[in-house]
Length: 178
Ligand SMILES: [Zn+2]
Image (tube, rainbow, N blue to C red; front, side, top):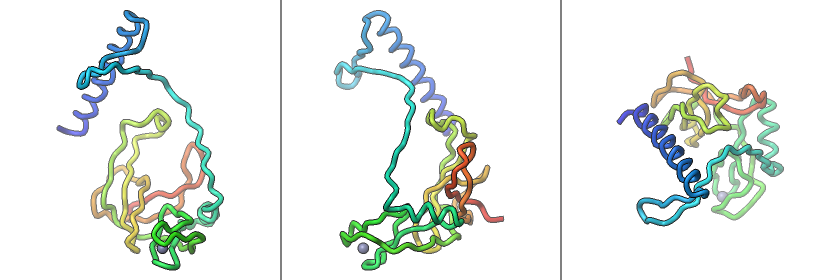
């Protein structure tokens, strides 16, 4: 089955189950349906949510300072040399904090990717986008948007600081070379 067929089928299934749910609410006054496999009653509620993220970033503030300087930073454990990206301030293997900061290499190669054309509501204002994983030259994998219409496995990319629009904030993306 192709990706488009899977997408169409999913959208059909979602709209069918929404219609069925509306009928149940109309006839019973409650959004409770029987789950088919187990025959257990399920409360089903569907609503749009507005998410606001507040993530403490004090321990990784160097990372954001790096973005302002056009650098993508990772952390490295001084004891076991593990590199962490996205950066984290603790090494779970050695149980130590205050890791060293290093700059990620710019060169990498796409090892996996997916085209996002069915977007979560909070991402619906973006054009279709590609999320990829690149193996960087230091062996660390980076998950990021790929700034390209076409991607293939093995494609050489650069890890670059970019501005994400329309939000206008700095982030990093993988940009094909050439
Ligand atoms: Zn360590």
